[in-house]
Image (cartoon, rainbow, N blue to C red; front, side, top):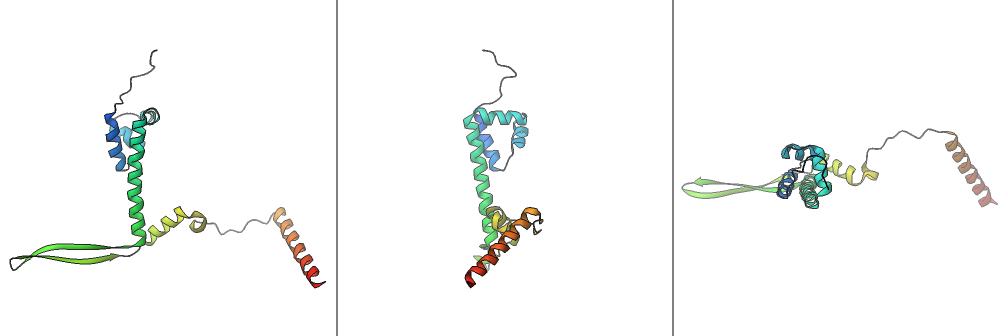
Length: 154
């Protein structure tokens, strides 16, 4: 059976490199430039080589987890211990202090809008246009309300 097109330049050693580059947030286009192949070739390697696909996915998942953790920490605010050593009268002294970094409002908004869009998402405040269907529903509700009033009073 003959193969159509050029032979693949894929080899298993590329998996480790792809994983490491994806840890830095590399996209398929960036992987293609790094390996000096076309983006379509990267797509094919991901589709045809489970080890390459796993390496890319694992690298991206780890990178995304680090960013999510950083965003979460920034949204909550945090304390950081800062220190330095100085030489005072011939003696090495460590100076330290705790610095508080308050919650970052934009990080909070970003987190909430993406995690709970139904509650925190940007919603348009425009009222729904009152078409014939809406008018009919309002009339039915009004009629039901009137009927309930008359029934309770009887």
